[in-house]
Image 1 (cartoon, one colour):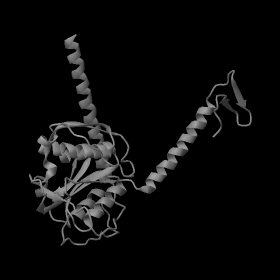
Image 2 (cartoon, one colour):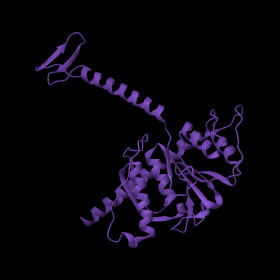
Image 3 (cartoon, rainbow, N blue to C red):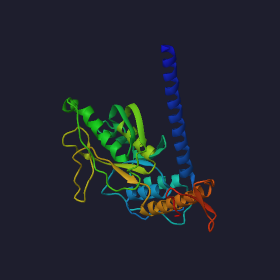
Image 4 (cartoon, rainbow, N blue to C red):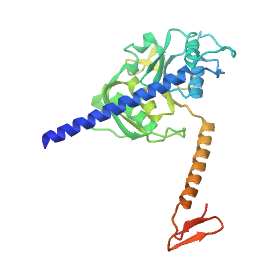
Length: 294
């Protein structure tokens, strides 16, 4: 009996690993297809970071961006008549910023300066011994990641347990509880990638300031968090929705239309029997238990 239980558990674990591997492969293939498309969209922003975000939204590309603001950055406008793929468009944008590279990693396009991406003072390189969320929304997953970072760096502060909560601003798709992530010895960067991949409607941005250090931690400051240029007081990242309000309203209308169609079809398929009345004018069957025509 013990052998059977062990064997069954091993098979289940093997199945989970295979499913996750296949899922990651599918995400990677979908992203490769998006990047190989002809670029018909020209971003309008003058900031390279904002241009990248525009491209991500237009082509629905999940990105993880580690950005350093440059005061002497050149304002760059793409020529409208130049033909290129989406991948080439992104490469062209990055060529006007210092030392940035774009790389596809597990279904996410990761953009960073190569030197900062591996720097030990970059908090994204912190490794979390164990991270797990089950059917969480984006706010819950983000809150748990911040807690895990603090608990790893300052375990003595959480010896007696912890409690707390988080707000949920109205951002399209971020309140959906579709995030299940589990792993050991993952970097903060890898966890952020897994969170947006599971959510399916987000990119993440971390703005690093190598000229400053965090007040209470041995890592580069993050931010700014406001127009005054103030750095974040804690670990800080942004999630940005890939879909705007127009797409949201369009999907709502489409969903409502589909639900109405299904309702009518289900009414039409109800078999006629005793205890039911036939609506002759529409040729539909209505059950007497309060069901009415929509």
